[in-house]
Amino acid sequence: MNPASTSPGSELPARIRKDPAALHPPPHLRDPAATAARFVWDDARALVDGLPDGGGLNIAHEAVDRHLRHGRGDRTALRWIGKSGERRAFTYAELAAASNRFASALAGLGVQPGERVFVLMGRLPELYVAMLGALKARCAVTPLFSAFGPEPIATRCAMGDARVLVTTPELYQRKVAGLRERLPGLRHVVLVGDAPADGPGLRRWGELVDTASADYRIGPTDPEMPSLLHFTSGTTGRPKGAVHVHQAVLAHAASGRFALDLHDDDIYWCTADPGWVTGTSYGLIAPLVCGVTSVVVEAEFDAATWYDVLERERISVWYTAPTAIRMMMKLGTGPLAGRDLSSLRFLASVGEPLNPEAVVWGQQAFGLPFHDNWWQTETGGIMIANVPALDIKPGSMGRPLPGITAAIATRDGAGHVHLIDDPGVEGELVLKTPWPSMMRDYLDEHARYQKCFSEGWYFTGDLARRDDEGYYWFVGRADDVIKTSGHLIGPFEVESALLEHPAVAEAGVIGIPDPTAGEVVKAFVALKPGFEGSEALRRELLGHARKRLGAAVAPKAIDFRANLPKTRSGKIMRRLLKARELGLPEGDLSTLESDER
Ligand code: ATP
Ligand code: MG
Image (cartoon, rainbow, N blue to C red; front, side, top):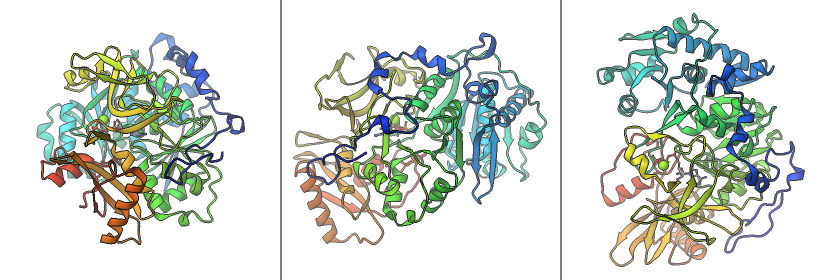
């Protein structure tokens, strides 16, 4: 791998070359274009078994039980590292038994297939066991962030008609108990842990699950049966509840191999919480379906802890997110000195645009670039990716995976789709329907769901462009794009340029209404340690941006912030920067994480 040329006006390489023949193990996707040309979704059926006796397709069977049938029951499926360093490991056989017990327990409680099970807890092993058990019981599962406050929990449980909630006594007392009367449908609350708790329908995990049968036969599961109900991150507004089905496992099985290149003996770490779809699709389902060892870390981000995990657990494939990468970049490569991270072989990132600076920093810090990929709660799985065998163009999301047809398009007032074939032209990123992990509805918002589709295309709400080699470049969310003096500006481009300045740790860019230009670009910047937000630095950054972007695109104003507001899944909430700047209502803040102004 060696940088070839640099992009204009920047020191960053425009291309990081890959030699597929030099990769070990050989990537699943050796020739991405050739595979994409011949792949059909029926091919993915070879990656799963299906339930015995033609019983259909169940995610938990494919993730866990299937491995026992193939003699892989003794392999470690989950390796859990607790906050104070304690460890627990589950082989596939142990995970099969534990999830069977929870499925049996649900049946014992009279919970019916199709009913909804919500899970609210930190990244404890029981979270994963409960999700798998509920899937076996053919209940639809919704994992919630444990850091949610009472209101977002109650709203989501009510919207999703939660019948069962699995949580801890502490979270129950603090966040749920006071709102129980708003949740008449919530019949059972299963508490993981020892602390006492009183309330209607309360059961202890230990009593309920440990005594339940480890023999459980998954009932017939229609591939179209709902499996997961996942709420979006709430970056652009009130979170939507995307309904997914068991058949999605075909996409997880394929993308786990194609995009994350998971091989049998990989030790894999996805840093996302299952409260965000990445932590479910790629923190639980895809790695287990691919039969690897998946590491779960209970603690929240801390660079030293994370580097300890990478080194001690001998992580080979690491899937993380831009915010975390930027936090690591903020500290420089110093904390990595003397560590042995030779086990790492593939680094991937998702959730937000990955600034070119961050892609390249991966090489400095870990000897490997980060591979950006793109998808949404709605798509259920990775759609566009930088795969191991493909040259990386830093700043690009990569190319559509086999089975996925992407395009750039516009939609006219009558709902007709106009595909834009010319490379380099911006438009909405659209995906040809169907694919197995596509959402099947928005909970309680069917009309909104239908509006996402026209003439066989799914409209993602993201603007992008495709280059002449078929790489996709994220421009911005349709809601965030700035229109200034006849130009369309994507915040990502401006943020990436600011991030190239050594003082900048994070940047969020918005449009401010302006009587002459329509909108002007304004940036909010958080600085790296050791830098002060002085007037001189402001001028320097404005100058740096003008040099990189030209006067039309560069920000006209820059404000310094200690932190930028982010969702719990780590996305910069530009809508909140804007609302605060303009004194407008702040909207739904249920997923807001850091709130330092
Ligand atoms: P909401 O829909 O509630 O506003 P959200 O869109 O942030 O929240 P998610 O489904 O978690 O909820 O995130 C998907 C979105 O994240 C994508 O539509 C895109 O805007 C952004 N995204 C994800 N991956 C990438 C990427 N690699 N590059 C650029 N943007 C990305
Ligand atoms: Mg979205």
